[in-house]
Length: 400
Ligand code: M6R
Image 1: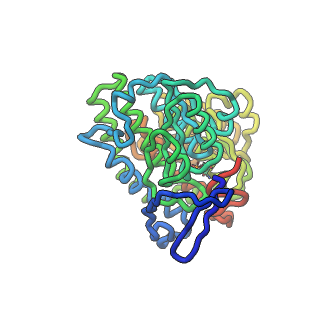
Image 2 (image 1 turned 45 degrees about the vertical axis):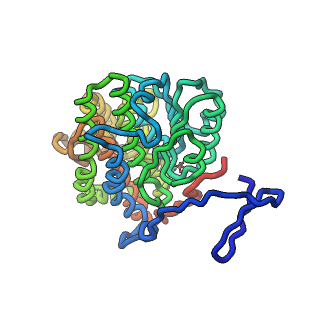
Image 3 (image 1 turned 90 degrees about the horizontal axis):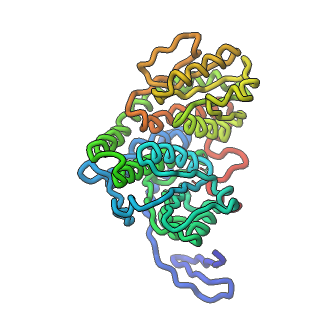
């Protein structure tokens, strides 16, 4: 911010570019040193994946009062929540993928239009935003340059801004009108895992609250969904107890150079996150594709050398996705299907199934993401990569 800090033994002073002292408010970071150690795990990424149940509990518990979401800490009363005309979600990378899940849930139950943008596109596309709109900025670090620039633009145009941020006192948190902190603790691994899941959990609370405020769901339905969300950490503990299925899948992928992830609806949003995670740490080229869009071009890439990870947890879309899965299987692809544990899958549909416990389909992304993270993790380990510090990447992208 064009300032200079002089660090000395036990003191710090700030100056502007002309050398004039600048007064600063002292903020104490509640940083737990243990969180910055691997604590017996081989990598920070694995540790952070295992921290997810606790991170969700810490993030949502203080925001549930008498079984209902309560976001009044930042001024988001039910009255205020019902007043917005449009919602924009702006973020980068994994945080943007959390926004895609948020869009789906907000539109499905809140019946409010939501647009999701990559911050690098949003800031230059002259978006139509105005007073009465809510712009949500999502960022683990709170310092991502494009997201910060998008926030400043949204404010200039009169929209209200809400940030969902993990790092306390970061630039995006300080400059936005309202902030909902995620409480994931420090995320050290470059590949974001626990920050994503807590961003999802905030989007769920926000969606339930907006849906109720707008009269789109009843109080009973809002309480039922909130209770389902509170149940997620226990279910995640179950999912985390069986990493061997993901290790097996990683052993099948380790020598491949290309991969496809497919899904529909929420599963498509998850397949994007699975694909990003895999490519960023394993260096295997992968793409995610809306399953119904395959036959409009991409299916020509499918051979016996193109594994496909199909995500199919949305039961109203299950038949449609399975028929796409059969199409890629018929072209020789090795298929891994991520779906509900109780769903039986014949050999002619998939080569391997990862079965998940069942909750409301709307909340399945909270469970589905874990095997996708673990597949990426174990593939990276098997390829001998530096899992926590993948090449060419930085944890915090503070330049354009
Ligand atoms: O700190 P941010 O959440 O704003 O960072 C956004 C992206 O740079 C980040 O999510 C990136 O995509 C991760 N490395 C993905 O794992």
